[in-house]
Length: 113
Length: 229
Image 1 (spheres, rainbow over the protein chains, first blue to last red):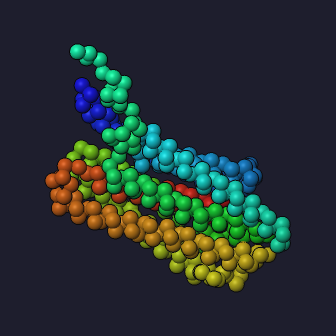
Image 2: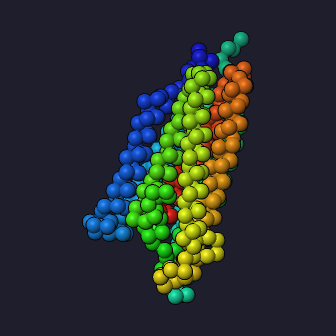
Image 3: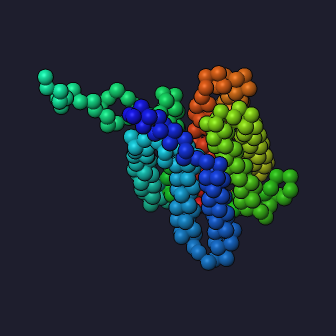
């Protein structure tokens, strides 16, 4: 019973990505990229949205794309909890580093210019 | 005789009670994840430095003006079009890679072979596009340590840093694509040589797949911070 159960669990790991799901994720990625182009080539030049909002939108859309690539293509969504959290929590250091270095850049901007 | 099992003798079955891996992934795959995590730190260090430099300068080259050519078709006037094609190629090759992995799960050797070939072609196309992009920018006057004499921005150090970081970061990424293509070719030959058919598992395809998707993932960020923002 217990052996069967683990076997099923193991098989379940691979059921995450069917062909249909793969193409679905592909169209999400394509759609998001198209949206980024729409912002860059139409909304910003026409002045409908400013550069600040545009940049914010780019970064949010990029993170959404990153989520789809890591979760579905790299299969992380279907891994065990320990692996998922182990990988993603480590990325907090990158966020800390971003905050640190951008503050530093801003400081240099004020001091050196 | 007392047949009840004492608390100590009970078989524990939760993830962290020993006897099995709490990650339940194969060793090589786990190591690939750790490598990719360290590589993610390297790339983010590059990109964050780019951000810090950009924040600290009065002026910075406008990407819409720097990247507006389609090599072989138009010299200027088409911002983002060529890099859009490159992005599409890389996302597409990522899709063919997952399809190869998916075929591997079904032990369908023939399909794995074709999807791997498609992935390798995608990677080579991307590298070709990058070579065109580099040579175009080089002709314009951008290179490590130099920028076009026609540059009108106030802060020339900004233009210099832009040039240095552009070639360093896209070069480092291109190097990853190049090694990815090489590894894909090796795995393709292993598939053709029935190595995985004999061992009964196409897990190796999955591991190189992880690397390949990571390269795609990095490009998503490079694309945003160099070409869009």
